[in-house]
Length: 155
Image (cartoon, rainbow, N blue to C red; front, side):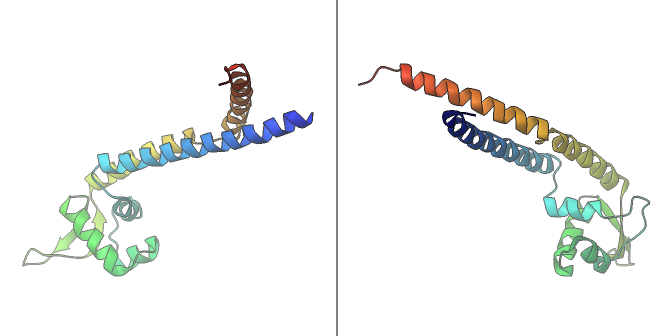
């Protein structure tokens, strides 16, 4: 490889890395939009996703251990998820919900839809083949930009 090509490849690789970072950012924004579109936050979905699919009730303490969130944070999320009908607790005579909590059919359905969307987004993220294509595209863009700069009229 010639010295000029080595320099060109380094610049192309840098451009490819910048393009790859842009793609990853776009995917992250897509993920954020997915949660917003479905009316849940990332922590709420995280909590929803750890509930057993068979509807087995789980305590706040167990949810905290599964997610790594503090019990106080889990309690807040449980209140939000329960008010949105995504999980359900047993109720006392006064109508207040108590532990343990179980995922509702609505919550299970939402979790499945979000998992499917996230899986599709993840599949579209950078694979080795895409990275190689970005490097090749960067090299072409680098050569084009050099020729464009050389052919531009000088002031």
